[in-house]
Every structure is written in structure tokens, then in C-alpha cells.
Amino acid sequence: MSYTKSLYLLRLCLHILHQRKDKLMTDKSIRVGLIQNKCGADISKNVEHVISKIEEAARNQANVICLQELFTTTYFCKEVKEVYYDYAESMPGSLSDRFSELAKKYNIVLILPYFERAAAGLYFNSAAVIDADGSYMGKYRKMHIPDDPGFYEKYYFTPGDTGFKVFNTQYGKIGVLICWDQWFPEAARITALKGADIIFYPTAIGTLPEEGKEEKRKFLNAWQTIQKSHAVANGCYVASVNRVGTEDTISFWGHSFVAGPFGETLAEAGEDEDILIAECDFSKIETQRRTWPFFRDRRIDSYEGIQRRYIENE
Image 1: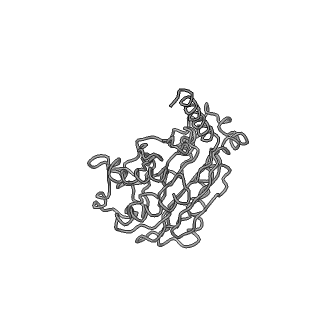
Image 2 (image 1 turned 180 degrees about the vertical axis):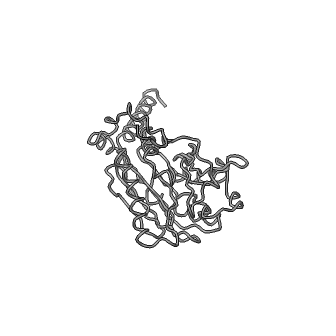
Image 3 (image 1 turned 90 degrees about the horizontal axis):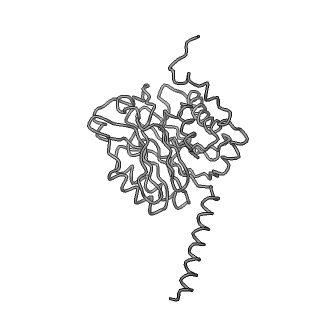
């Protein structure tokens, strides 16, 4: 091959690379996929079922796919039994290896919420993030741990020690919080301040037998309202995925949804199994934050009280 021809091919390759880089910098739209499903007692069947749903979401051009809280098992925290500690697993490990292969095959980012065994007697409610090239990016450990009838999580989980995290993936900067975290504006705020374009909330929430239709409606409305408010207050996207089906005493209501930075509902599932896909244009975040510049107008010099449990009259 002549020198002139080699130089031409080199310049052509550089031109193509620059075009691809420019496209990545200007094309900020991604397709978010939420897998809303039932879980049974057989962990291997749960995993296979989820994999088939992920593959379907990938065929529908989802770029970032999030699974529900504790996706490999039933929601065992509804009761206190030592045997459930055996569900916990380490990550990275065999489970993340399998999903890394899946992420690489379909060029997708995966968010995997799971019961983590960190050491003997030390367990967390965690979520791992795998990038589109199959690389393991790290984990977030649930910070806020509830303890209510039917939700006895303090027996199983140590409060998270990772802090609030943002993962710079191939498709954007994603924050991950888990279930009970979704009720705390501080968690969403810090995650957004760290640069998250979108905050994912893998969830397990539903109604107890003594709660009727009206209570369910109120809880569901409050659940969606608080998370949409995080989207508005932080000018970012929010995606929440819940499970469905009845597991002993808890009926999980589903209604996974994706909200835009104005708090608008972009997509919402019902109460059956579903693969929810929504288009998210991250370029709108800049416009939203110029319209409502909450970050600009925050009085960071006056918020010292937020670190106190309660403020007495002074």
C-alpha cells in the first residue's frame, strides 16, 4: 500500500471517529427499560424469567435497563427468618458475570438490585451497575432501611456505607437509590448534585391485607408524587420500577413509571407484568434548570440544620 493511500485511510478513520464522538456529544436521548415482574420461590427460574425480559427490552432498543428491588427472590423481608440469609450473594460474582455477558451482547447498561453478602454476618440491600461493554462499574448500598409491619428490613440489612453514587455509563450519568430511599429528598438532591441525569429507584412496595382500596390509592399517589417532586426539584429524570403479584401477605401494586424533569409522566405500567420503555432526552435538563434554577438559588450557607435529627425552638 502506498504512503499516499495509507495517509488517506488514516484521515478517513479519524474523520469517522470525530463524527461518532460529535454524535455522542449531541445525541443525548436514551431509551430506559423497566422490568416489572412477579417473583417465585425458585431463584433460578426468577433469573431466567428476568433474562428473557431483558432480551425483549433490548430488542425494543432499550439502552439502560433496571430491575426491581431484590429481583432474584420473593420479598422475604415480610417476615423474620434466619434461613433467608442464605439468599445473599457476593458481587462481583457468578450472577454479575452472567449479566455482564448479557450487557455486552446487547450493548446495554444493567442495574441489578440484590441481597449482598459482604462478609460473614454482614449483609446489605444493594444494586450493581454493569456498563454496556460488560464491565462491572460498582454498587450502591441502600442507605435508609425501613422497619415496619411486613417490611422487617433492619433484621437483614446493614445501612449502606457507599454514600450516594453516580455511575458515568456509556449512556449517561445514572444515580441509583433503593425503595425506602425514595421518600428522602436529601438522597435525591445529593445524587443530582453529583451529576445524575436520571435517578433509578428499584422498589418493592404494596399493600397489606388490612389496607383497602382507598388506602392503596392514597399510598400509590403519595409514592408517585414524592418521586416526581424529586424530578422537579432537581431538574432530572426519575425512573421507578416496582414488582407485582401477591406474596403471602403483601400485594405489590406495580405502576412502575418514568418521569421527566418537569415531573411529567413519560410512561407508566399497570398492575401486571410489563416491560416499560420510555425515551429520555437528557438535553432537556439544561433547559429545565435554566427555567427553574433551583441549584443556582440554593442557600447553601443556611442549611446547617439539615444535619440535625430535629430542631427545637430557639
